[in-house]
Figure 1: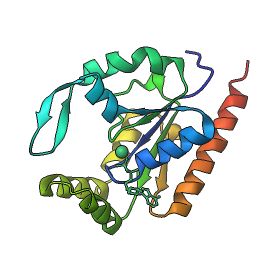
Figure 2: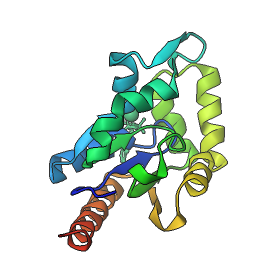
Figure 3: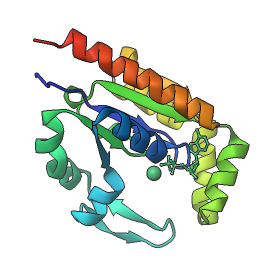
Figure 4: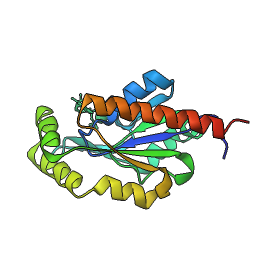
Length: 174
Ligand code: ADP
Ligand code: MN
């Protein structure tokens, strides 16, 4: 499949910094920030609201149908706390953001997460769930794990992804 621009997934446990990274990266590169949260909500790719978790119950088939035509064109930064649902052929780079437990606790508490969701997300981060999911779903060469505790780290992460993008463009120039 040929795309003139790549597709990047920015994934990680909620609170690791996905949306912040996507917004900065979109601003710097012109790639489009695709918030899966918004797609699920706005295009109703869900089977209702889960009250305990305070989140939508995602209908993955509906979600993939909703974004397929756009994403296949290339040039998207996908912002979502899962990555195993997107077909391998759509994706050129998978960034997994990581933070320490204390930082995550503070960020999720500030967001007033329900207790059950808070604990589950902290466990998930401790157990490397997203990193494993990324490695199992994509070729290891395209999976990159990056720390996202400080603003300096976010800055250097975004610079690194910008450099990767420039290299991708060179490699894929026709
Ligand atoms: P996610 O989209 O993964 O849930 P957000 O981008 O919404 O995460 O970030 C959660 C909170 O953590 C926000 O308040 C954000 O400003 C802060 N944050 C995220 N990444 C960093 C970072 N690298 N340095 C400092 N603060 C960060
Ligand atoms: Mn987010």
